[in-house]
Length: 127
Image 1 (cartoon, rainbow, N blue to C red):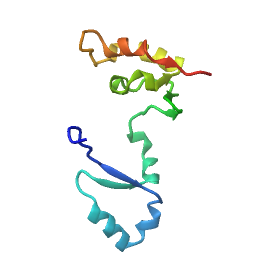
Image 2 (cartoon, one colour; image 1 turned 60 degrees about the vertical axis):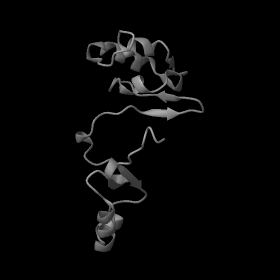
Image 3 (cartoon, rainbow, N blue to C red; image 1 turned 180 degrees about the vertical axis):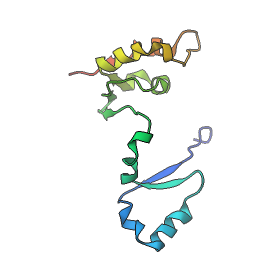
């Protein structure tokens, strides 16, 4: 862990903003713990202003892997950093990834695109 430190940027707390919004004491306690690079957020803040947030992949955790059940290509980053044996994709997502091949940016060390190499190693979700 020393060579790969973890820098926490937020804490997700149980409860809703309305539980502390009316209390100056609670708001002050939260502000005292926050910093420019560290925020305390509640679950309801995740769902506000969704039109301003970027798209994400939706996954379902299984015992040994994650099923990525999203239908649309969002980014190649996950496929470049996660071991392919931990992922399963839908056929729709795999097809959409290939349709967006012109937008791929991650190159493999030995040459070629990372997704060309990785996608052949990722199994499809079992229906």
